[in-house]
Length: 327
Image 1 (cartoon, rainbow, N blue to C red):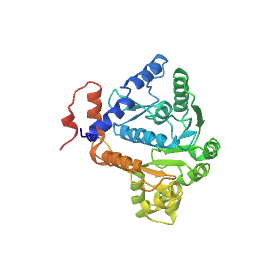
Image 2: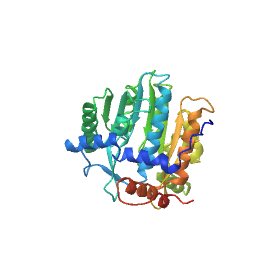
Image 3: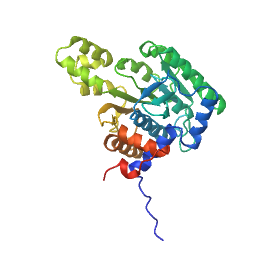
Image 4: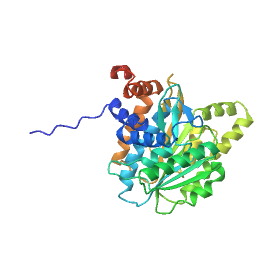
């Protein structure tokens, strides 16, 4: 009997279970939701509210978690997630009743296909109310699920807390550094201090489309915009091209992987892009193909409107698969 070739997952089949997980619609995350609700730690007015496109960012993160930890378990004993803009742990989806896991809470509860999870979560948050919510939510879930994860939360401005983060990382750790600012609140050059602590920290950067608008102003002679950009991206003072400046800075971040994902909102307008750098990896590694394909699907097949349609179907509010993707 001939072996049947494994059917390749379609874009819808690949994204739907991730969206179910993120929005508390699968059995595991439903339990997380009930724990939070029962302890009065469900969504509040202090939590951020973003459009449905933000779930594509979180889906990218979760997809990479599974790849990265499955590989890391063969070489490392400790796995660290570093969240430079950690928020409160939950995200409200704008103009809907949907709620999503935030990045730090996602990292805390995440288990790869073989059951590998992060050993340590390092989160930085500057706002008092968000920090308080994050602290209570993460520690509650850790207790209720009997997790062994070490949680280190740091309150303050990320640019002033780089040393605090670096001191939490050991030379033999594997890490994922997630840089997710609203705009240009961070000086990317400072990240080298964190990366110097271990040779095995991957970087995922969320670069806002607003950075390009600032660049346009700077190129038209706006000195204030240029100064802001140079603080965000120090190499820009020598290279008057955003892509070249970023790539020059990123040589210290690691090897470029062509898995950049463009995130688009309900109007299909570009909001930001996710850029991945890894340290180190072998050229042609099999996992790269899967990550590149997933990032390409995010760029070309999904946007905020499609995500919202899928959420409506997941949560029983109608919609058909045919409505989501045009042939």
